[in-house]
Length: 179
Ligand code: AR6
Image 1 (cartoon, rainbow, N blue to C red):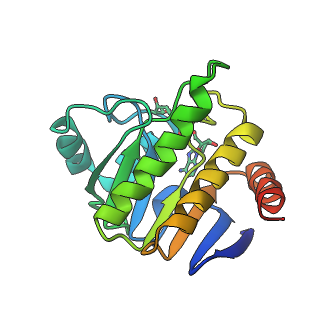
Image 2: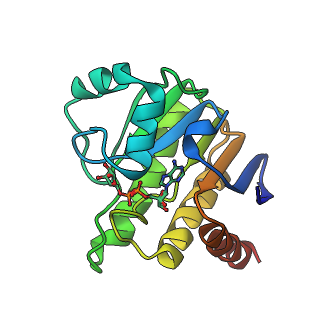
């Protein structure tokens, strides 16, 4: 497993290769669809690992718009909470980076409101939703850094990247952002 970490004020920003469903942070983030239904990719893996009660709770939430976030319990996951956010479907429009940033910031805000001290994100929108990973990595990391510089309380933000190549893209984006 690859791992790097950086300090941002009193918080740690960590990049690893790994599976989102296996993370031991207090919350994990789901790259959800608007219905908050089990699907493929991260959403499918999270619903499978958390168990059927997650879908029961999600059904009652009435969906989620692009760039917004909702919270549920973690059920059979190690994580106590799941924060579900819907990233943009990549369309090469000006709205894409705005919506992707909102997904990260609204997820972090919801974590703070629930006194969550550690959270793991996947690479939102870069699978089925088609966002180019180099561009998405810059937005993901700059949003998290901006939030950690302005807010205290979240001690660890981790990105669980599914492939070594995504890890390398995130690592070089982070090195550019903090240099
Ligand atoms: N752990 C960590 N990362 C993963 C995992 C995992 N278990 N599985 C996939 N990835 P995606 P999106 C990576 O498609 O682009 C779903 O069907 C994956 O390789 O999960 O936001 C939903 O229902 C990629 O790098 O999310 C939505 O309809 C990244 O996670 C739609 O896909 C995101 O891939 C959301 O699409």
